[in-house]
Length: 334
Image (tube, rainbow, N blue to C red; front, side):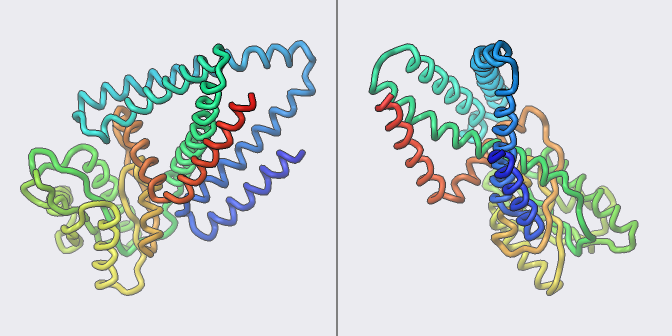
């Protein structure tokens, strides 16, 4: 009953926070805690099963968990290879490969510690296991709330649709990733125009060292080619990252309309972190996502997750160090 009560409590807190502002990472954690305590409550119901069935579940669960973890690791490794072939070997493209190798390392460490009677090895295993569990929990929270937030409908008409830039190909061509964002913005603009309130589209992105024009310029040309009037497009062509996208776009929008509402368009993997950034920048609006190629999604999500972790350095470093100490102490006593 306590687990169910805690699940309800965290669900109520989640609902209250979402009503106040959807763009908080605490929403993801509260939802994750509600689901975790609900799962604990359901596990507690296993005590009501016949002893034979309960013993079978206790024996089979570890055997099911190991193949599942190995399958996840293999999928991450395979995706890392695909990313390297399609996108190159930059560090950001190798995150799924690194995550797969790290997961295999943790599995090997835990299996070895379970078989070898070595106190130092048990200390290391404990110090690794609890922080790994913490990071896995936060990743699941991130995935769950990203999925939920990305499917929330746009609540009201916007004065501006802000399209975030991405790298160009061949120096001045819109790649499929960026094209999906522009298509999503075009559809939103067309739907709003049909209701009699055509929005202004803000295309946001500066010029990279390997590009012949700014991302904003290429995006504007793409939209004009699709029939968007040039006078309905504004260019923000100075930004180099998402934070600057929002900062410079906010200045542009506020100069044109003091009390404005906007919708920010990016890709689905980028939605939650962009929402966190819009909140910090004081931008009044919602973030919506465009679809992403399946092979690109795992590494992109891991990159976004790492970026969110880094944006809360004190909380996460303290939590990881504390859990490592507790896990190491448990391994020493065991």
